[in-house]
Length: 351
Image 1 (spheres, helix red, strand yellow):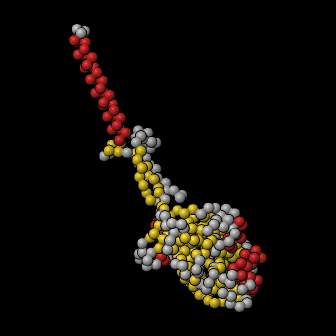
Image 2: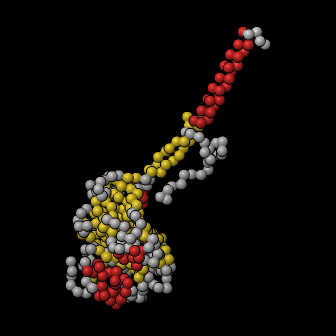
C-alpha cells in the first residue's frame, strides 16, 4: 500500500516509517515512534486499520504505502485500539507468600507503593489515478504504476521529490503489479505540528495471502517498532523475522462477536486474535514484507500479571498466628515441664 499526500506540495524527501514511506519538508523533522495495526483476513479479503504515533516539527507529511490489489480507504474506528489493548491486557493472578517482606508489618507501617504493570494485474504503462477522496483530515489518492521511474516522475510533477533509494525499494512492488494509496497527513489545528497519535485509517483490498507490507521500512533512519493485531480464522504467525527481532506473541485466543469496534472488524462469526510485537533495531536489514501463515495449533496464550499478597487468616497475617501459636505452644510446653519437675522433686522430698 502506498500512503502519500496531497498532490500540490513543495519538493520533499522521503523517510521510511513502519510499512510505508513518509515524505516531509527537509527543513523539518518527523519521527514515527510506533506503528500499531489491526489486520483482518478471511482468506479472500484483507483489511488493515493503521494508527501512527508521530513527533517532530513537520506541519504536514505524506505517507506512501503499496497494496497488492485495488484498495478502498475510509477512516478507522478510534475506539478499536483501546478495545484491543484492554482485550489483550495481562490477566491478574494472586500469589500468596507467608513471611513478611519489605513494606509489610513489622518492616513498615504501610505499603504506599502499588504493583507496577509489566512493560509489558498490470494495467498498462505509466501511472493512473483510480480514486481521490477527502477523509476527515486526510487527502487520499489511489494510484497504479507499472514503472517505478514513471511513478516517481508523476509524484515529482505533483510536488514530490523522492530519492533514488525509494524508487529502488518500490521496484519489487511495481514488478508484481501492486497499486498504491497516497495520503496527506496534516494536524487538525492551524500552524500546528504533526504530533501524537493520528486518526486511524482503514484499508480494504483483495488478497489470498495475509501480507503486511514492510519492505519500505528498510529506508528508515531510526529503529522501528511494530504492534500487529491479527484477526483470522485461526492463530497466525509470521513466516520469518524479515530482518527484525523474533516476533513476540503476547496474546492468542478466540474472541466472541459483539457490537464493539473489535467485533465489527472481526465479523459476525468472531475470529481468532493473535497479537504480535516486533522491533527492528536495524531497519536496513529488513528483507521484505511480512507474510503470516496459520500456526500449527490454535493454542491460546495470555500474559499473566502476578500480584503477590501476604497470606492472612481473616485480617491477621498467617505468619503472626503461626509465630504466636508456636510461642504459645512453647510456653505451654515449658509450663508442663515445670510442673512435671516440681512433682518429681516433691516425690523425692526435695524442696
